Image (cartoon, rainbow, N blue to C red; front, side, top):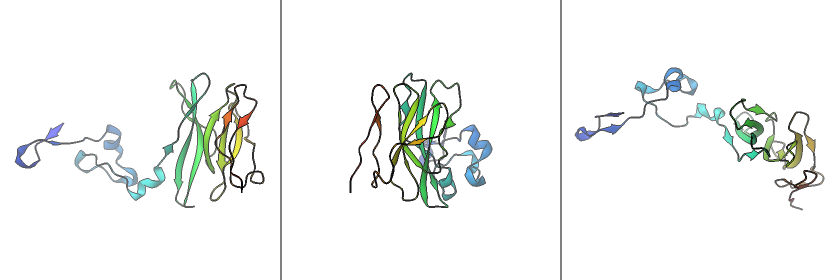
Length: 171
């Protein structure tokens, strides 16, 4: 859709808002002006930001786990939780972790039973390695601050799902 509002009568581009934006307006209750969607992030939008990390696919490819980062403006930190996604689109995304910390670098075990990942306790924690049963249960610590005071690196599974490899800086 174009309108003839540019100087000289030439058409200028006009971007119409998607129907949901037209009906609901922007975050904070500001409606789009004159039916025209004007992109841009406003301060009121910051708590709504969600930044997905790289996904890791299950061995059968039907599911994925992704870390989703969000700002916590009250504590002035970034937090991240792990989400389980159905790649077939048959089920909605489900949270695997609560997102109170900074969970990252998920790695699916080759047997499909576990997800290994890093967790940094905010605000100043160093990332440590945990494993989580995909079908429910509590995460288990693999490394601790006492073992690796500078944190652990991203995990990699052995082909038989019995071992994890990772790097760690030493003081």
